[in-house]
Amino acid sequence: MFFSFRALLTSSLCSGLSLCILPLSSAQADTSDLMSRSTLTGDWGGERQKLADAGVKLTGDYSSETISNLHGGIKRGTRYAQQIRIGVQFDLSKLLDTPDAGVVQIIVNDRRGHSATEDLLGNRLSAQENYGGQYTRLTEFSYQRNLFSPDLSTKVGFMVMGTDFGGMPILANFVSAGFCAHPLTMGSGSGWGNYPTAHWGGELRYNVNPSLTLQTAVFQVNPEYNMRSSKAFSMPSNGTTGAILPLEAIFNNDDFLDGQYKVGWYYDTSDAAKIGSTEKSSNRTGAYVLMDQAIWKDEQDPESVLRLFGQAATSNAATSPMRRWYSIGLVKQKPFASRPKDSISFGYGRAVLNSRTRDVQEAAAGSPGEYDMIAGLDNAEQMLELNYGAQVTPWLLLRPDLQYYIEPGAFFGKKRGNALALGLQVKATF
Image (cartoon, rainbow, N blue to C red; front, side, top):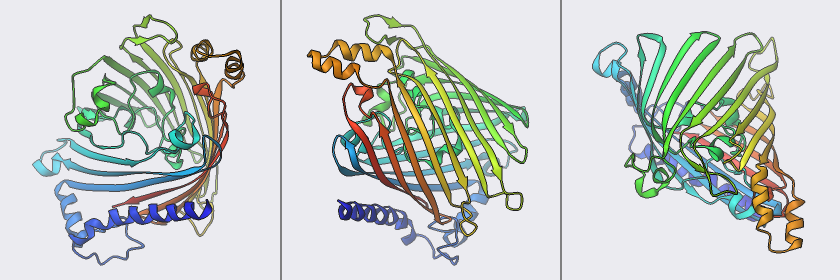
């Protein structure tokens, strides 16, 4: 088991790097050192910077997550999933030589691989944040610009709602989708859409002052067509069931011990079936509170900081299988003086099952013994994650990872042993 897992980790790293190296053959040799430049492919002999200066910025990255189940769950084994993302930004102010003309952004996303959660762990909280929608698709085609002043901006187009709402950058330090990067009640209980699934929508953002930002949006809810691989580049408008409207307030604390707090609420106009009933609910709502706060910082070295994060979210009682989500954790940035860009992250999360879902599971039991088993399950799945993010070069990050799931079968009415998983995340910027 150990040797097969080690071989797969090596394979995942090598396959990812081989994909990243592909552009090098067509680019001019870069004179900067491979270990110190900001991207794997460098500046392409100066051509990349020339394009950016002219208003065309090209981006690309690769990530993979290899997870091995060591104990509990469904069975032992290892699964690998990867994502490749290619994007381009057109700065129209530079291209058209017109002040404040806005930015057009296009992103194409490709996901491949297999799910450790579905195949091995049998839990609800995906162990791989880059698993889901394993095909190539258009993830964003948007236009963004200021309105009347730099404090008021808008963004419209075909894009991912969760890119700008309901998340925090600090949560990207985790491998499991339980933490990275939104409370999972959102997608479970409404038409909320997270990466990489895009919808038609429009956003409005207003910076009231340096400490407060308000934003809102309206997005299409399209649960069927937008998930079809056959519609990956068609930007469908048919199949719409309603619209979702989020409201979010962002509070920024710029003191020495800085922090950010988000309070949000959303309303989905779609009809949805009530759990355990033939009736339908005429709408779905939810709310969340997010926190990222520095609780210690070295006065002599401000990059050495310990941050505390927390999430609390609730969703519609009538329609959402995941009723509530809670998480809390710590991220230590610059854990060692010699490793200024590394991090150590630890998190705990609890996903609470809707009691109506448990009632349905109990009613479907085929025997008194099965009923007793289901009734004896916890009403929540819990998880813990500990990882170390090693920034090997400015463009390459390796994140060894441990995940532990308590009551992994709770959401499915299954008795499964607590699961311990070992993993490796690889991130590379082209």
